[in-house]
Length: 326
Image (cartoon, helix red, strand yellow):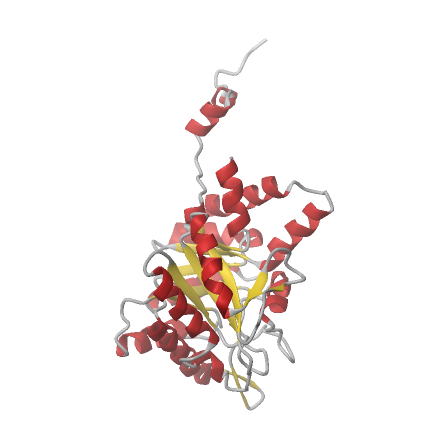
């Protein structure tokens, strides 16, 4: 009887040995926590499709950020829901808009203790619910660029660290970079939703941010999930336009694209573990089909293993608690 000369189980013999040879690490420092803030809201509103996620009034934002920081999470991603929407998405670039007020308030209260990121898109702000400006019954790419650039500059004036364009308009990174530089905000970084796919995993987010399109869909500007080479072209285009951090979105069903981005490009890589991924885990755990802690950690470790340097995730707070308990 022959025996194996190489016994890999030797490296799994005890918990301390497993820790010693562990190849992928995960900590709260890897997380970016989404925060929804709604104009004219008097108290927190639970998002029905996303258990434990809430839309916040402006007065509650500092408390929420304090909680996030206490968990060791270094960054937030702000999403705003305005009280007024119009065809031009004017609330998005209003210097007194809800996102701008939230940024200013957080900056005044926390200084540089937290990295403030903000979504730069128009779907929450337009009456159409689309990510760009409508002209002649279709999304006008170049008209939308001007609005996105104005939105980024307005956020920069409020004190944002990083703007995060997610509209998937061609040229959005270069338009925003030029506008920021021209206004003296060359230190504000850009984390683009570089390969944002036309995904069914976004449905709960549209509930949370009240941004479902009023007609049609987003197939003309978001990347088809069937086209990996096209996704890499989007990433490369953003890099050529001067992006600071690229993002693959969603994450769990797109681990191959995270890994391919990491292999091809020497830039920081973010992944967005989106609302549908979160909602599926929450629903399954509530029914007792999965252990929430274990499966959450496995998902987040897999995203890190694929090559993500940072993860935007609705699991941020709960995962930070799990990791502290481990």
